[in-house]
Image (cartoon, rainbow, N blue to C red; front, side, top):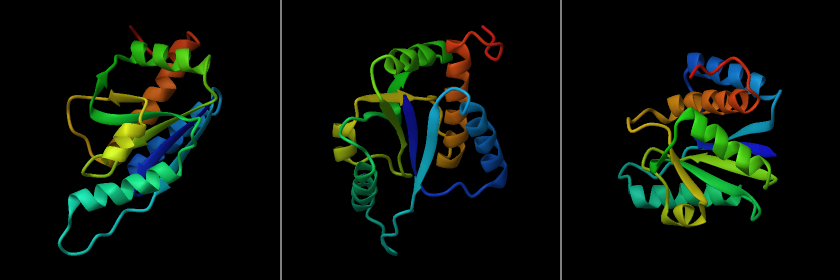
Length: 156
C-alpha cells in the first residue's frame, strides 16, 4: 500500500521539519510514504474564507486519484486510540492500493473535499497548528506500523 499526506502550505519551523523527517525515514521500512505540500492560497487583503477553502479544495482534489481512499484529518472526525488507528491502517492495507490523508488549510475543508472523503479522523479534541499536526500525524503513522508489527515502540 502507498500512503500520501497532502497538506496546505509548507512547514516553516525547522524543529518541526526535523521531527517530520525523522519519522518519514522510519516509515520507509514499512510503507511507501510521501508528503505533498501544496502552496498556500492568497486571496487578497479582504479574505473570504469560503473562497479560500474552495480554492484549496480544488488543489487537493486535483491531487487525488479516483481509486484513492481519502481520510481527512478533521476535528469533527472519529477519535481513535493509537491501537484503533493501527487496526484501521492494517485493515486498509489488506484491501486497497493507496490511501491519502489530508490536512486542510487554516479554515478547514471545502464541501467538495468533505464529499470526496471516505473517512474523517480526529487526532485530538484540542486544536494544534497545521504545521504541528504534520509531525503528530507522521509519528502516529509510524506508531501504527510498529503496533502492527508487534515492535517495542508503543507501550500499552
